[in-house]
Amino acid sequence: MSVLLEVRNLTKVFVTPGQTPVRAVDDVSIEIEEGSTFGLVGESGSGKSTLARLIPRLIEPTSGEILYQRRNLLAYNEKQLREVRQEIQLVFQNPYSSLNPRMSVRQLIGEPLYIHGKAAGAALDQRVLEMMELVGLKPEHANRFPHEFSGGQRQRIGIARALILHPRLLILDEPTSALDVSVQAQVLNLLIDLQQKLGLTYLLITHDLSVVHYMCDTAALLYLGTVVEKGTLAQVFRQPQHPYTQALLHDVPSADPDQRMLENISLESDIFSARWSGTGCRFAPRCPANQVGACTTIEPPLVPVGEGHMVACHLVHPHLNP
Image (tube, rainbow, N blue to C red; front, side, top):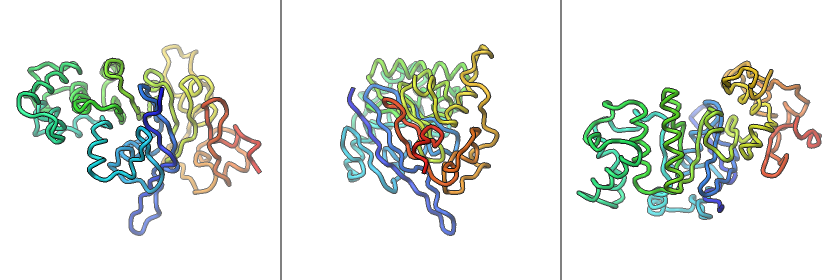
């Protein structure tokens, strides 16, 4: 498969008057192959949603490259961006807040066609009804408003809206976190079916490793804006090397208490209370492993531990320590 999207050394620094600059995304590099699902995993505050908005340039990056079909989107003008954004669409976390409550389902789903001048009148209505059927909504829903639907139905509206322009890449920003567990499964299965029918490529952003295990081909773990481990699904789940990955896997629930993915590894604090000093490993203040001197003085580089498997940890690469 060919690479559809490549992000190289992408960085976003937020600066507010009188405060320390915040590196929300820091030197992130990922590749997403066409037709695959790439999982970006991390806790709240790790920079996942910021990265999701950087890719279509809803937020302007500080530095780096965003290559879509080998073309650098940072070199695009507004007209070119408008065109390429038809191929890169987002599905947001909260389907209620992302839908205009004053617009009907027909208007919400059809708005992208109207904005981009792709259809109008009866042709637009026909496209909307076809898309509603594709995501499991009934024709009689077309004239209703978002508050008349359940959370799962609202997310289907959001998915239909994102698909109406026939994109190639869908960025799914926590698409099921606001839904009940049973509804989550329905939406995930819908996304899998749509990917098979339409040949879509997904960037799935989530804090839930069980969703990654169900949906993704490859994954990257993001911590305080930087990638600490990435690889294929088998590498990340069966051979996790970074203590952060191991701790998140420890919290993945299992129907069999004797079949937990990892034992005796857990995080005692959260990402905000265990503050990073700005030097050394970002995860060091929370790391449950026995640390070495370099952990608090030198930030570990992201280096290979196998074919396509990369980890940023001094404990995994002791030979790199001075």
